[in-house]
Amino acid sequence: MRRYDLLIGGEWRQAEGGRTFTVDDPATGETVGEVADASPADAAAAVAAATEAFPVWAAKTAKERARILFRWYDLMMAHADEIAECMTREQGKPLAEARGEVEYAADFVQWFGEEAKRVYGETIPASHPHKRLLVLKQPVGVVAAITPWNFPAAMITRKVAPAIAAGCTVVIKPAEQTPLTAGLLAELALEAGMPPGVMNLVTSSDPAAIAKVWLEDERVRKITFTGSTEVGKLLMRQAADTVKRVSLELGGQAPFLIFDDADVDAAVREVMASKFRNAGQTCVCANRLYVQRGIADEFTRVLAERVQALRVGRGTEEGVQIGPLIDEQAVAKVERHVSDAVSKGARIVTGGTRLTQQGARFYAPTVLADVRDDMLVMREETFGPVAPVRVFDTEEEAIELANRTRYGLAAYMFTRDLSRATRVMERLEYGIVGVNDGLPSVAQAPFGGFKESGLGREGGRYGMEEFLEVKYVSIGLLP
Ligand code: SIN
Image (tube, rainbow, N blue to C red; front, side):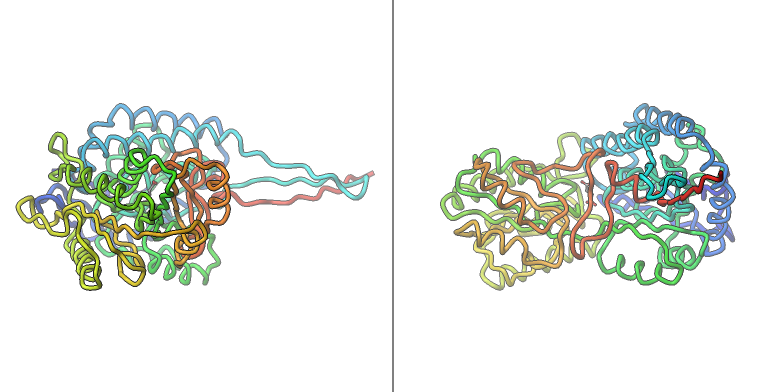
């Protein structure tokens, strides 16, 4: 059992009234931890602590800020197994995947520690000899970070590391399903020497109440959120009253186009990596598979064979590749999508059922064939281990189908033809495109979407810009 209080102003303190809530293992329903259940007053106290810490932190040199981030990185890597186990217990993903996520999460801390030293301004040639024009980059101020349950470590560091590197202070609200990994990361940040108030952690069973306090508070200058498009729109509306800067990483509905000239084995490998990572609970996972007619049967057969061989079970068990879904609603959504598809004529090639012998929240990795565009699996984000295969004939048709959505986060294609890859890549209306690559996410590259998949970018030098104000200074030289 892990237990965490709120981290406010460098101190661990109980929530108002000593309230707490428990955290469950999605594989078993067993309680694995307990955390403080913050009130709106606690949320406001965190903002006060971040506001007080801001001028001191912003005035530190980039090298000083980087040093702390590097120590945090080292501690995360030294505790990688412990963080991974904590993540698997509260989120369900297999241990090997959780270990991979710790490295991915730590990469953001290291990369932005390095990037802190490269926040360059600019000089602009003036129109008058007695003037000098400068552009300065300055931290935006207090940042509110609201993070999801599907990547309990990486979605925190992808937001917090660039904010802190830029000189901002942060208040974080992790998802109520996965606050323990957040507590552990915050503990390590303190051990790394993070000064009081620079990083504040507020756990709560009532996310909307905490978000409301932060959105209404004019001292919070930026909100960064990963989650559903519906909640993202709500936050964006609420942020308008105080004209906060907003970064949103929202839903996806990724198409994966597999052309006739693709190496089927390699394409199946990358589709599996994309589709079944975290049991299909990622915003960038392949949601819709479009396969060109010439290889459709072969591709579907090989995919089904590999999917059938996936080992489903508790993430803590050796060799497990697919863990549980996060909660009952998630399983119910997958069931709804599959039964809708079947009722409209889709064929279950493998899977298609709950695996109740493993536990209530396990769903069999599934491949659907004879899929049509009007089925829910092709129109909405399933967020589960279901791979629907839809056949297409021409390149033009594939592009049109891929873009036929209000989302635009990630898209993928498999082809050996460089000219086709270039043509298609240019026309896909997506923020991330994987060409012969089902796992493009890395710390040094921009992550974010077109259309209703979000605003702004995380990761890479673009991720740093989100936490910087641009200040133009015109200096008149006196005689
Ligand atoms: C997400 O699903 O939101 C994040 C996935 C990634 O970083 O690759």
